[in-house]
Length: 283
Image (cartoon, rainbow, N blue to C red; front, top):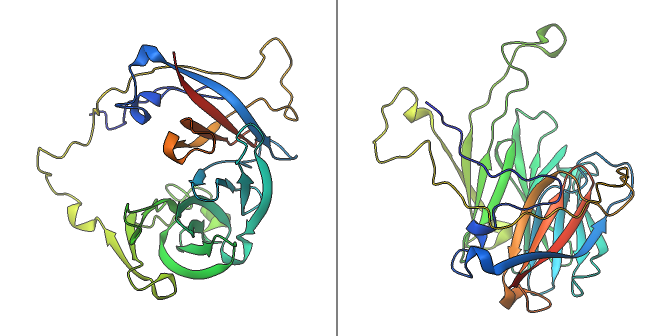
């Protein structure tokens, strides 16, 4: 049985899943994506310098996961045509790899992998002034996190990736350790400094016949509305240019929250280390 979700394919600088993001905004034939601004991280390139991106509508900032630098790069997009780096959040004191970032109001949450990736990871909280507020332990290899709409909860997907498979390289790496995947639920009801954590595991469902109403394969086929690539294929590729390669994360900014009053799509490109802003226009 095929348990891999269907995927639209994205090459280089984007896009194929606008249909899911823009549902209810316009018919497929009435949308056009236009690149309007790009921020380029410096060398070395091809090194995971832009992976996941989150948007703060009040300050009009983007928070971009820079896995290479073990940090969050903070970009000002009050002028979306000229995204400008205005700060960084150094995560090296809290772990080895930055995997995800989310924003709710003045609170920034960052998922950080432990130095030994099979150990419990952390979610690290900062305020809008980039000051550390709290760190809480979650499951192994927290790979994605998000705030609930009311801001009370932070949900964390802990991937639980093994260090090796089938004891490969055990002579030097030791035996394979495969931590359980889990979901951590962080409660912020009493404030970020008094956050509490509960972690849900799925051991109970091992070797269990699931209810047939639980769909584990064959999701609805997404619709590709547009495809945009801002690379010039007639020129040799140069990492130092603003051409994008390897989209890893995206966030959609509704017109009401956008600095220019237009719906925007922001893409973090892992290989080229670029963060590019696209404007969605009705035709």
